[in-house]
Image 1 (spheres, helix red, strand yellow):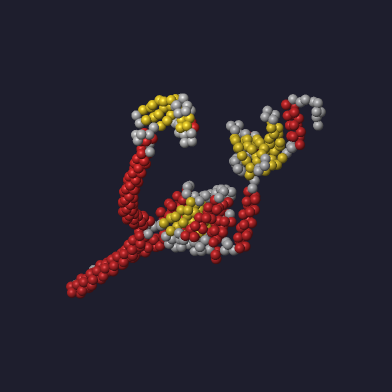
Image 2: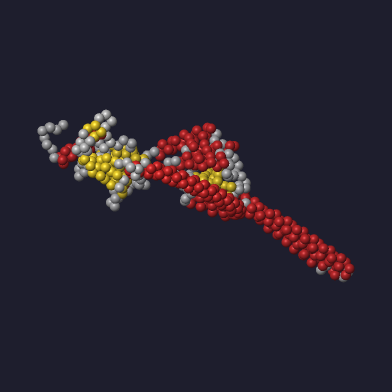
Length: 474
C-alpha cells in the first residue's frame, strides 16, 4: 500500500503495477479463441485471446513463433503458455506467449471414439446391414459441394466410363456450421422423393476439424436410415469418418466412388466387346484351317487324277465354304444386331433426347397457353368495352337529369328574385343613412330621410306621418 499523500507520476505508477503484476503472474497457461491475428514483417505475432466474457492482448516474438508448425488463425481454439507483461507506452497489460498449440483436437478424438464405440455396439457397421450397389444405375445422386474439384472429378469419370447416365447434384456445405444438417437433409430428400438409384456422398481432403461434419449424429443416422444405397468418399484414402463406416460402400476417393458405381456397366460392355472379338477370331481361324485342309486335299494325287471325284469334292468344298461363310456372317450379324439394340437402348436413356422431347412438349403447351391467353384477353377486352358503353350511357343520363334539375332550380330562383316583385308594383324601403332595409314601422321615425327602391331606380323621401295597425303618428 502507498501513502495517500504521495503523488506519483504516470510512469512511476505504471512501473509499480508492472513490478507487482509480473512478479505475481510470472507464468500462466491460458486457453481461448484467437481473434485480430496479425503477423508483422519482423515475424512477430500479435493477436487477441478471448472467451465469452473477456479478452487479453498477446504477443509472440519471432524467436518463439518460428517453432510453430502452423500459424493460428482467427477462430482457432488455442492453449498458450507465457508470462503477463505490462507495456508502459500504452499502459496496458499483455501476455508474452512462449508456446502455442491448438486446443480441442483431443476432445474431438475422444468424441469420435465414443461415437464409434456407440454405433459399433448398435451394429450399424455390420456388413450384413449394407445394401448392394445397383449394377446398372440409371440416375446417380451426388451430395457434395457444387464448387471445387470433387464434382468435376466425378463427372469426368462417369463420362469416360458410362455411355448414358443421369446425375442429380444436391449442393451442400461440406464443412463448417450447418454442414451436417445440409448433408443429412440432402440424403433424406433423395429418399423422400425416390429420385436416384444410388447416392454418392463426397468431399475432398482436410483436417479432422474440416471433416467433422461427417462424424455428426445427423449425418450418420440419415445414411443408416437411407433406403437408397450410399457410397461414401470422404477425404483422402487415409481419412476415415463415421460416415464411411456406416455407408453401404466406402471409396478411397470421390473418383474411385464414381468408378465403383458404374463398374458393372463397364464390365458388361467390355465383356460384349471381348466376346465379339473372340467370335470373329474363332471364325477366322476355323475358316483358315478349313481352307488349308481343302487346299491339302486338292493337292492329293488321288484327287488330281479322277476328274469326277475331284469335282464332287470341289463342289462339296464350295458348299461347305458357303455354309461356313453364311454361318459366320449369320453369327456376326446376330451379335451386331444385339449390340445395335443395346446401343439404341442406351441412346434412348440419353438425357439430351429426353430434354429435346420435353422441349417439344413444352413448345406445344406454350402455343396452347398463348392461344388461350389471347382468347381470354379478347373476351376481357369485349367485356370491358360493354361495361364502358354502359357506364357512358349511365353518365349521359345522369348529366341530363342533373341539367334538368339545375334548370328547374334556376327557374324557381329567378321567379322568387326580389326584382320580379318590383316589376309588379312593389317597392323596398331603405334607411338613407344606414342603407338597411326597413321592414316595420317600429324601425322608422318622423322626419327621417328614407329611400324607396322601384324597378327602375330610387326615390328619396322624408317621413311626415307613420301609420300602424293600432295608431297613427303625425
